[in-house]
Structure formats: C-alpha cells, structure tokens
Length: 242
Image (tube, rainbow, N blue to C red; front, top):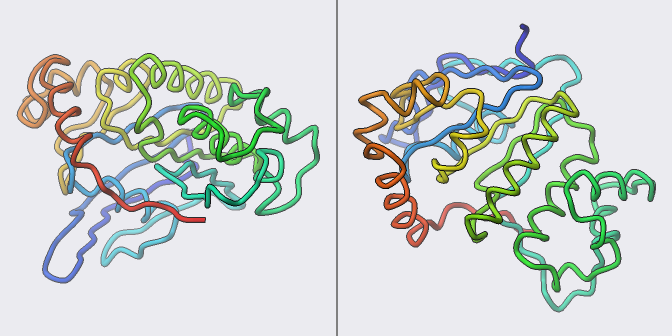
C-alpha cells in the first residue's frame, strides 16, 4: 500500500546535539502508528519534521500530492477572559458550514458543546473540540501530539477508542505521539519505540516483547505506568498558543 506520508533516513541536529538519527516512518490509510519514547527522545521533533515545521539535515519527507494533514496539539492556550463559543472557535481558521461543524463535533464525541464557551469546557471536552477542528479539513493524515495529557485513565481510554473509530470510519492514517503505553498498545496497528533513533518497531505484541523496549520501559504496564506517572509530572514540552 502506498504511504500517504513517509520519512526516510531523517537526521536532525540542534547545534552539536543529534536529536534524530536515521529515522524512517511510513503512514498508510486506515492505520494507526504510535511513537513512544522517553522525554527528550525526539518524538515531538519527528512530528514537526513530518508536518514540515522543521527541516532535517539529512533524509527526505514524501507527501502524497494534495495531502491534507489534521493536527491536534498537546495544548492550546486561549485567553480565558475572551468570550468565544466552540462554534466560533471552529470558524477561526476559515468559516465552515454549520452542518460541517456539527458533524465534526459529533464525530469527536462532543455535539453538546457547540454553544458553550471554550473557557468553560472540561479538559476532555476541550481536547475533543481540538480534535473536531482537525477533522474539519477532511484530513488524509491525523497527527495527535500527547492529546490526552491531563485526562484520567478512563477518559484517555475513551478518547483513544474514539480516535480508533474515526480512523476506521474515515480511512485516514493516524500518527500519535504518546506516553500512555498501556492504552496506545491496545489501539495501535504499529508502534515505533524512539530514543533518538528507532530502537524497535512493529506490532504492539512485537514491540512490548522487544529487549530495547523493556530496557526503556520495564516489562509489563507496571514499569510503563511508573515511568508515565514520573514523566507526566516533569513534562513541559512545547505548547501551542493562539
């Protein structure tokens, strides 16, 4: 199957520091690929290379002609004093038909939020509205960066199931960056374990049994959860602002 978006032999340096070394990835329709790795492993940098926000020193990124990318950031800051309904927020980048806006909110699982103020949404609702916004462009590829940060485990599990349903229904490729190993392992078709380079990759079963994965995350979800909780409290990656 032809990849919608692929990267081959990506090497990225910041000064003397090599952030990514010879990393390759291919995203195909209807499949969910998840990148896991410790903090500082280059996950967000790879994401930025794929969307064209960073230029690598070596390697190539290939996109299908006319490729539409939907992007759901980790966080988005909206001035809480500024009145803005969800419906108005969905019109910010370009005006959309009400029927399209409602359909996107329905698909994202938050149709009831349309007239609510953005500042009054719960964390989970807010992230789902960002998800709806990404769906408006009818993306071929959906890129999700730590989208369930701050949600409890049942909330994040529900969100990932919704993402899985969308992937199957719309047939788009999904690329996720996540810490939540226990959940993403259950919804991903392919997992890539990154630590500056690709340590191991394959189906969730293959990766979770790989020595390189166990070295980074311990065996079983006990080690993974402990690492996730530790990193969750020390996680101050880039934030998107609006």
